[in-house]
Image (cartoon, rainbow, N blue to C red):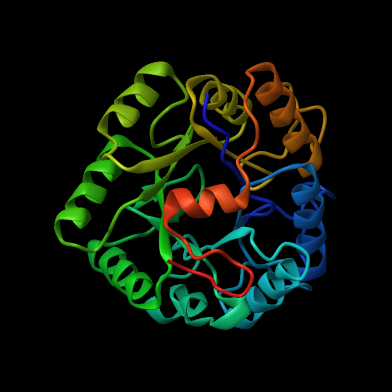
Length: 285
């Protein structure tokens, strides 16, 4: 079976230290979490940046620059993806600011959510114009989109963008199941989405909340990759009695992968799969 792509999501936009002491907030904390993750085994990292004092999500490129440069001091070939989320900020200049980074701070990839959607308490607004502008800017900057998909309609929209020449293969799809208003963590929803993927797609499965472990395990068994980390779930158990650490999640994925005879895909292998530059000072696509 092919090697397992592991996309690590150490911190998102919502969880705070009051929710769990294990969520990394400061650049130093995020860098250290990634350092530990690299030692355990990951293929790529999906980054959000947070204000060190307020813990609020931030969009300014300098916050991402500190994190990315710090990571590349010890993992110069790790595939790095930066968020362009519309969950908090929805001005193009803010969402695209991280795409202006260059040199050792340039992300290889950036998230591109392919439609608007509701979470349980907030909305992520992604208008067609915003999606196309972000895709165009990524193409101009040589940054590969990390296509975030929460239901089958978003895959159809990806095909629309492919027809518009705004996306080019190979594609990287991040299928996220279990959100209250989107595709659920069951075989029918997963099967429909997988069946609709375009050719030349590298695909990882993520699950929100209690869906994370089930969807990750399904992905490992089906030959797909996984998205895993505290961004999507802070609890180790379904009963929500044990607060997880990122290391616990990654080690659990390693155990499942070993049982299935799958090795973690290296960053160098993922770069080849996605047509990315080799790292070590050359980033993007």
